Amino acid sequence: MFARFLNSCTLALWMMGLGGTLLPAQTFVPSPGQETTAAEMPTASLEAFALDELETLAIQQNPQLTRAWYVVAAAAGRAEQAGLYPNPTIGVSFDELGDRTARSGINTLPLLSQEFVTGGKLRLSREAGLRQVDLENWRLMSQRYRLLADVRHRFCEALALQTRIEILQQMVDMAELSVARSVELQRAGQVARLDVVQLEIEAERLQAELEATERELPGIYRDLAAVVGDPHLSVYKVEGVLADRLPAYDLNTVQDLILTSHPDVYAARHGVERARLLMDRARREPIPNVSVDTGYVRQNQNRSDDFRIGASVSVPLWNRNQGNIRAAEAEYMEAQQQVRQVQNELTGQLALAMRDYSASRRRAERYSTVILPRAAETYDLSRKAYQGGEFEYLRVLEAQRALAQAHLEYIRSLGDGWKAAATLSGLTLEDTWPAPAVSVPPVPQSESPQK
Image (cartoon, rainbow, N blue to C red):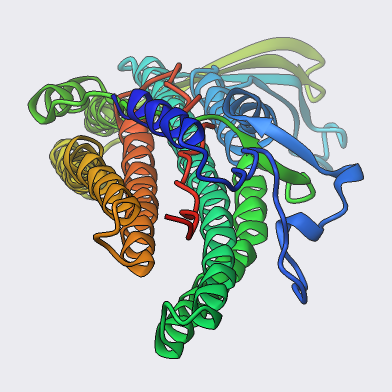
């Protein structure tokens, strides 16, 4: 609806011959004296990026994801190690050396020993390790969606700021033209000097706001490059559209989704299973392992060849692993509470994102359906009244500035709505997200002072 309204408004203004030229959507004109704005950065090594390109770069380059992958690999290695059987040992023994009947004594070589793990402890250790691998895999997935949400958030922030700069530039041009025409009217005795000064102040205010907004862009581009994972990535511009229609999110539906299917919830549940296995493992620790040894024995005193075999077990008399058992039980209970804590944290994140999203979306809809049409109608009526000799030219300019300011606030609301939607896209695990497709709302140009 808003796009159709803008197109019809632009066509009507052109057919009425109001004069002036809209600033092209892709043109950026810096103000004199600027030091570090996006327009002044050398464009030879800078690039414009679409959202899908930035998402792909982030998945490939961001060190957080790479680090999380290595955490998974480390957990897999520990799980494999936890289930390995103890190595046998080999040794020698020399007894009764220097005996008067045979100075070489009794020699046992080789002496082999092996510990046999009982009670299924190795199986439990490996299963607990595998649950840790699952947990880290879910954390990796969660990190991926958080990264995508961060990229989308910064992208929408940069896109909204670019659009705002383009509108502000048009408003500055419009204000300067209004000042020039008002000076002509002052010379003709149709407006007072006070009115001209007020218009000059408004033009300076808009210029100051434009320059301040331009200086925000380089920092936002660098922040976007850092989130992508390449601080040396030269972002000159982001390409997309601040679409009028925001994605639809229902609070109850989204909450049910994240409380049951979010990777953080799955990770916490695997943490509970891991803690249960470790608790069972701790309870089986007192079951003694059996150590068996055997070897060849050379009796040098009587020149005989013998063999030996022996076995030993530890007696769980003083140490029955009771301290570790209590600790494992407490950690199991803690892991159960961790699931609820994660769900509460996700609910809080959802509440904040939905608050910002709903408010921004409602404000944008209000501007699109009510405020902008009425501001356009006010401008149209004031223009017609001026042509009919009923209004002063300054009244037309005032209506024109009100319409342009409404455009700015609308863009601000759209930008806030898309940023909140980007955060929600991470919570709802959206791999493909509606990237905004950049159209700049046209600003009506200054009315000619001839009636």
